Image (tube, rainbow, N blue to C red; front, side, top):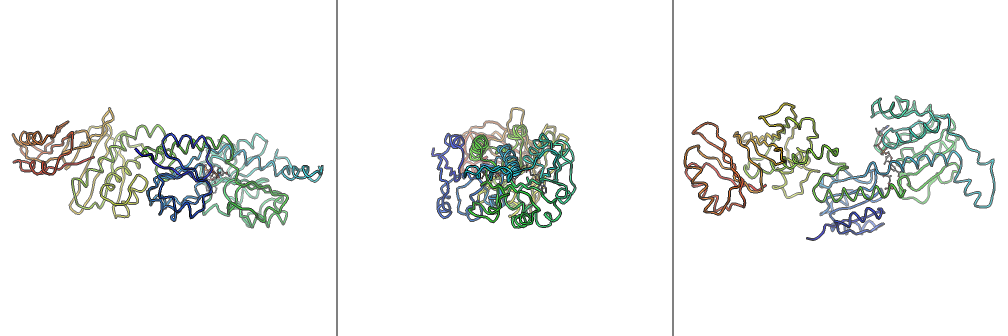
Length: 529
Ligand code: NAI
Ligand code: 3PG
């Protein structure tokens, strides 16, 4: 079978490329002009980028085969996640793989700027042995203000405490416990931090709220002689305000790894001797790039195989243990969803999912997505997958609700139940996973049953009287359809019953018509799951 194709559009470690090559047809084309990239992107099932290539609506609308974008790194501000979701494209990143490198680069930048290392280096190499000009400052005993106490911010906190610095931090989105854990004094407002810090370092993502959060107002209240570091995203420290504060002597030094516009070749900040700059090198170490490359390659392969992608940013996050538990339920939910339009034609107005028993405390959103994918994928032209299933349902006016209950339902340890509302009434479809991992149907059309959901199934309503099942089975035999398993559930003796049969092969329209002529058979439908 032809291998799927991946385009690696930015510099990714050889170790990652080798992992991709084990399973995929890999093209490495770095620094492609945009028009060229837009021209060829429809040939690829996967795209791997870092922070430069813009993955936006323009690109995604041309990427007709694309199933996954792997961001070999952390920040995803170069990727339009909403657009990717609309197009059903999984976006995955490697948030933990380069944090140590980014933290160490932050500290490297800070020390370089406090001790004038780059300038002294250049001066000496130009043959001038000057010392007094490069008198620096110690970090010991000073206060560092960390904005954003996430993965990198917290690592900076721990390391700077070892330098004997007092650590204060501002992050309104984390618990008090996290401040305590990293030995940081919690600041209630950003300005409280700014007013007290000798060094300010930012470690937030770039969002509407954080872009420019250290600006003119902050430099007005900052201590004279404050030092600033930005190794997060360009513009979190407003570049024009920083330039002004440097010129006014408010800021003693600045160390900047990231810029509002990248790549760049000139910038007003380059004119200052007390500004240290690097070209977005936070993650550029051998170790980080190997980790990032291998990690993203594995996730891209998983995504293309339809397996769960641990760091997919537009899917619910599943921790490893949970993933193992939920996998058979994801499979079950998708099969339950696939049943509906093969049995009924009434447009769906609402889907109510209820998860009972062992499932109640799990990340059940993933199961709802799987049910919606199963429901909508077979009947829609557009691509429907776990990423966009909810959005596609919403766009079609289907309301989706989700509920969990800890008690067992119907005597099963775990139950996935979908109540489908249509203008014609409600239909409940329920299933469970047996201890050996099999997906089983346990309720349909108000009948109880217990049959394994296999690839080929017959769903038959009949009158509960002797001879009906026998005649039905005889015709199946004549049509060369072998029954693998069968269950009959009835409401009450002599009334109607539901036969659910797992069969070994497809049942033709001709055979179905014949089956429907059997006296006592009310309906007979073949479904493929
Ligand atoms: P993270 O998501 O682990 O932590 C970010 C923290 O910022 C969170 O705790 C969050 O609550 C906090 N935050 C969000 N909005 C805030 C606000 N308005 N005020 C204060 N705090 C706020 O992110 P991580 O992994 O620590 O990365 C931090 C930054 O570093 C990101 O921008 C990332 O893209 C960047 N980065 C840069 C690298 C480089 O090469 N220079 C390398 C790796 C990451
Ligand atoms: C990140 O967000 O991971 C860093 O900014 C690194 O970006 P890069 O992969 O372009 O070096």
